[in-house]
Figure 1 (spheres, rainbow, N blue to C red):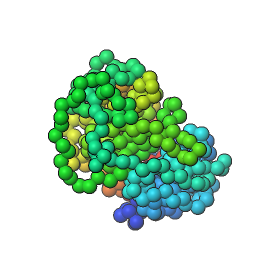
Figure 2: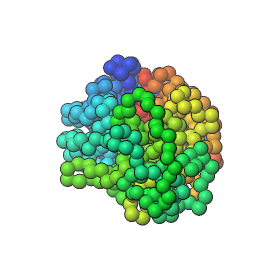
Figure 3: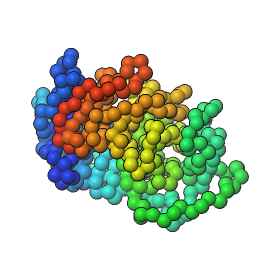
Figure 4: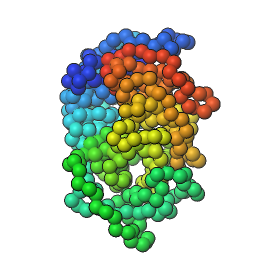
Length: 397
């Protein structure tokens, strides 16, 4: 029997979930027979769930209380608390567990904190260490150093020969630690960024890179920060500054080593790569889906197909799922299909067994979309299952 743990928003976050839920499907017939079995562990707004790499332990970001709670499986369909909740930060919204299983990284939307939390041999959370706060590269400290996209490409180890057409072609992309444009002519003076709402740091996700470093996004400051693990927790190695106002949210590491980052505000997918010196920079960007409207559409999750040839982006607002084909060795992507998600406000999705499960936060439902075996494109809505304010789907061990 296939099982999924379901995270959701509770009353403290305007939802109706009472804890971590269970979604089940009959073996050999799932996911068409998926059904919600109710809450299996009481928790206040477990909005994001993450699995320990080797233990039957699940970690929940309790967004409303700003804490992280561990749960151990203690039966076929039940979870029990493992240790006490650990303070992380305001509106903790994402957790990523290290491949070693010795710590996790929590990202906090409310106060921008990036927090390393140790895990003991049983998977129990321990000491939290708060990393250095992000600073706004577009703030009072001045504009970052900039480089044309062609200069960024020239600085990388194995750049693609040709970039796909993109609304960001020729746009300024930045890596302030690398000094990419040191030998290039001074760029033309740009118009100052218009005044708008005060910008705040909003950490949103973490991913473990092939070389052992960690990437985190800051949606509020348009940053991807690269970290090293040290005795004191996390030390920032350098940062990649994306164009003003794009809002990097979630990301996925491609088997090739490239990093694909989806932006919440501009509705794009940026591809990042590391140069021979280890510094990361953006090498391409494309709109996630045709007809994307800034201010109306807000991409949320990005995930790969099992073979890594297709990326899926869920889009809140239009309530769609975009499919993007990975080009070359992962250095760029292109949108090729768009489908109805079958839910309202698709907050998260999960690729499983030839299908895409999509969590509709506002519709109180999880939809199942068939995926074309040959192209990877979503083909239609196969099934829907009711679930209270779902925000996260995790395949149970």
